[in-house]
Length: 315
Image 1: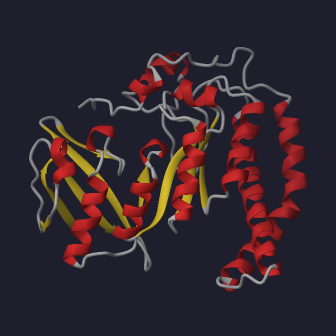
Image 2: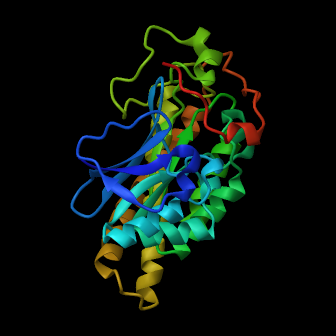
């Protein structure tokens, strides 16, 4: 793996003006390591690790509001070293403004994945995400204007989530038109406040076998079968919406990516044929709750401002 180490600690990373290669990185407390790993023929994955006396933790590209300006410094350093390569990364929606979007483009960023999670502000607050729905909308617009692909991670099944709030998430996807989506159900990770608050409901199975398991670890509003059907339904909806956009582009003579547009059109037509069956199945499964006593909506403990700050990692 190729890696770069920022000169200086995370507290003054915004003043960084250079990068040095580290074949065998051995960063100390307070330093941030930029990892550039292979992700296929076109893009690299860029991720960060922040080091402390207790160990290391992965952090999003924004690194918290206290380090405003470091992405711009990162872009300048890459340009100065002739090291600009296409990459993709994960960022928080509240860490993206016009300046950051432009710097990411300068640095070679091709794709940004945002943990959008939900289109319901109530659910985002219950998750203690520290973000607002309008920040997700704004981030997607700014990244697209900068020429960067936008992808959303979505999460369903958080305690207390209703059908109306699921629809709000679909609306968020519809209006922002992300280039790709990743869908999961809420998963209580050990060591997190969410885990502690639903711990009493966890049965013998307390972890997934693989990432596509989609089994509920606690008593959600609906059954695991509902969320598996919802996973397929949202993906089908997404592909149908992309097909409609591709058809409009082809009809208006925008053929700059005609091959991709035809591929999207084909995938969308296939998905469109599945939607009636998936919709009927969802309606039937929604009639049956997962439990007579589903987990109620979790009241947030932290304010949005506090929730937006990185938390200490337990070791």
